Every structure is written in C-alpha cells, then in structure tokens.
Amino acid sequence: MNTRPVSFPKHLSNQELIAALPLLVRRESQAIAELVAHLAEVDARRLYRDQAFPSMHQYCVDALHLCEGAAYKRITAARTARRFPIILDLLADGRLHLSAVCLLAPHLTEGNHSSLLEAAVHRSKRGVELLLAERFPRPDVPQSIRKLPVRQPPPEMAAPSPPPIPIARPLRPPEPAFPPTSAPAVPLSTPVPPSTPPPRPAVVAPLAPERFKLQLTISRKTRELLDEARDLLAHQVPDGDLAEVVDRALDTLVRELRRRKYAETEAPRKPRQVEESDHTRHIPNHVRREVAGRDGHQCTFVAENGQRCPARGRLEFHHIDPHAQGGPPTLSNVTLRCRAHNGHAAEADYGAELMARRIAEARQGRQGRGARELAPGTVQAPGLFDAPESRA
Image 1 (tube, one colour):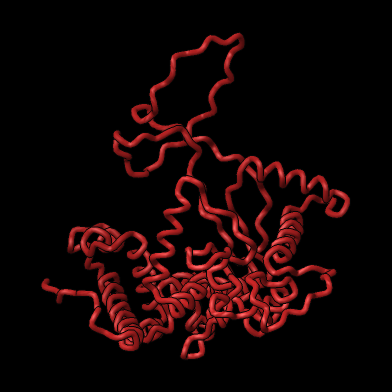
Image 2: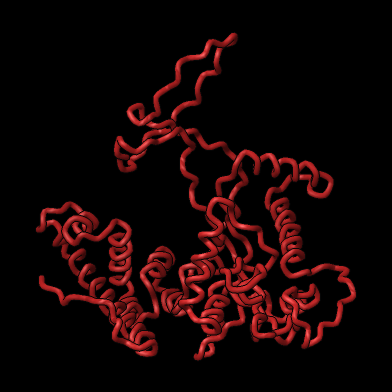
C-alpha cells in the first residue's frame, strides 16, 4: 500500500501549527473508531481463523503488526463496543480514548453504561481511575514489606572472578538466583555486573474516593528509616500503621521543604521593607512567602487562550521586570514560574540564541567540578547574570 510521504511542517506559522493539531487529533479519533469497528466485525465473524491465526490477538500482532498493548486495547474496545455501540461515537469524536474504554469495560452493564460513559467523557486515564474508585470502591490492600530476590547475571555474561582469597571461616551460602525471565538477550559484548532486579515502577492507584494503594521499591536504608520512624511513633501510633507513619513523615517533609523554598514558617520574622528602587538580587523571605501563597504554589504563566500552566514542580521565582534591567524583588514584581516558562521568559527578554549559548557555556564550565548547589527556588544561571537565578 502506497502512503503519502510525511515531512515536518516547517512552512507553517506558530498559529497555523497549533490550529492544525486539533484537526489531526479528530482525524486520528475517527480512524481509531473505524479500526475498532472493523476489528469488532472481524472478531465476531472469527475471520482470523481464515487467515491462519488461532486468536484475534495473534492476528493483530502478527498480521496487522500492532504491539501487544495496542492489540489488547483495540480488541477490548471492539468487544465492548459490540455490547454498547455508543462507544464507537464516543471514540470517533474524541470524547473517550481507548484506555478509558479498557478501564470501564469490566464495569459496564445495561443499567449503568449510559451514565458511566457520560461521566468518563474527556477524562484522563487517572480521572477514569478516580471515577471508578468512587463508583466501585475496593477494600484497602494489606500492608506488607518483603525483600526482593537478588538476580545473578548469566554465567556467560558475568565478569571474570578474581582469584580466591584464603579465609579462616566458611562463606555464607549465596542467596538463590532470581528466576529466569523472558527479557531479551543482552549482547555478550555488554558487561552485566551482578545487581538486584530493576525496581518496579511506583504505583499510586485509587481504591476508593479517599483511599489509594501505594506500591514501590525501597532501599535497605529507607526500610531502616521506616522501622525507626515506626518505633519513635509507637506511643502515638501504637498499632504501627505504615500509612499513618508515611503520612506523618510526608507532612513533616513538606513543611520543611516549604520553609526552605518559600520561607513558610509558623513564626515569621518582621519583614524588612523593600523599596522599588532596591536593586538587589536577593528575594526577601516575606516576599517569597507571600508570592507562594498568592500564586497557590503553581506556575502563573497564562496562554493567550486563558489556559494557566498546571505545573507545581520545578517552580522558580520570576522577576516580571528582569533584575538585570532594574526589576526590584518586590511582591508586585515577583511571581512563580515553572522552569520551562521561566526560561521561556528569559528567551523573550534576551533572545533564544544568547540563552542557548550561555547555557552551553555554563554546562561546559561545570564539567569536572560538578554543579553548584543552588538556593531554594532558583535555577542555575546560564552565565547571563552573576547570581544563581535565571531571572529571579
């Protein structure tokens, strides 16, 4: 099948490029809905058997060359859409995505499918998970801490063993090897040192409207800290509830981080009055504290369409009138910006080429000596200013 060659749309203006994306997304949604409808009919007629495949999934992977995950989502959506055809319309106009259909599928019935599908419209995957936790709450998972087994490298990949060293006492028997997996083989030229299995990705999944499951891999040091915290809280948390221990630990950590980054404290000192004429790079604590509260600990960049940046991480103090151009560190001139939009403003003020050159020079200068630790709420200066803030 011949396809039209695709090239990067460098000829489009910024406005045309942004305007084209919703049209492409709608076109993709329509194509996905049509693909799901065709898969549903092929599945219903079992035509995959005529194509010499034992299952619909095998047909999608081997004949249509979909990856396993993509095949699963599309087949699940196809079979669910045969039960509730309205799903095809929701997919076609982009009100539902495939991940949402897969999450909703086990819970849809003749009695609830209309209201449940309507409630899931335009929700992200996480939003659908929260919706299902509200409608179909699950019990709390039992608390457990277990040690992960140590995976030894295959014999042909292990590094050469050093000559044995005489010892006066017997060695402890080695721990059992990690069970073999179906992971792809690593070339023999790639050294694979003995290591523990790669940590599983952290999981934060909703169980009920106010309950979440947290699953992650921690180090031995973290385990020891967790045990010590539980021991120290024995009088206040006699049952040693891990969820309560983690909640208190995070509450203390967040308070400390806010104190360092935003100068938020229960007993703040009397602030020194900052005049508009003060040409200092230091942002007083009371200004940082009031800016953080006023801006709600969120980036304040607002697009032309009124969309505010949702970022709450990597926030930096941003001078509306740049300090290098005489902007003072006052409440009216300082706001919160994420690192991306702080850098975006610097490029607008000083030019993207100059900022890129300064950043490259700063990175080159840090090689061999490491990056300096920055003050809370600041970003490494790319050589444009003399202080550890890009625009603050």
